[in-house]
Image (cartoon, rainbow, N blue to C red; front, side, top):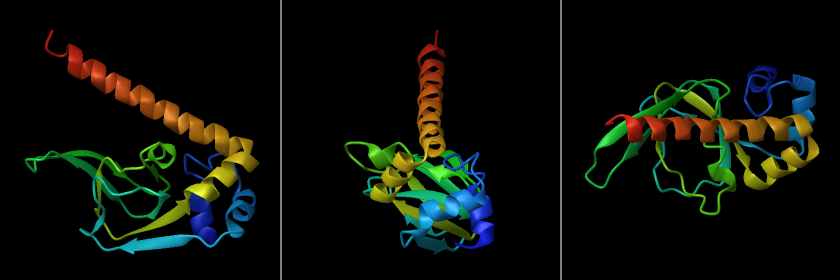
Length: 153
């Protein structure tokens, strides 16, 4: 990993609060894959197996949902240092619920589930950060359901 990439990871929800020197050994004992995508390129499809945590190192990634009638709803853009679908990585059915598209040229870091599990077991700050990411997602979804459910009252 380059120094710039490590610097970006220090801002990631997973590694926040750790210096680059602390992150480097957590990642160095494993060969990590990076994905480079061009603007407009499809990265992953809704329904694909999700085996690696994706973290945006550079660029912007869009997520959207589609129904069987091909209607699409844009959900969120992920920018530098964002972890994409962290809860799905440890779900029983590791199926990506959204389609991911490169909004700009982008680079993604892929951290396999087993490596992520090792990181979480070896570093308490990363574990707390990861659990906070998941908890925040639950709160956001609950708020959206509440708004949807009670908006017609």
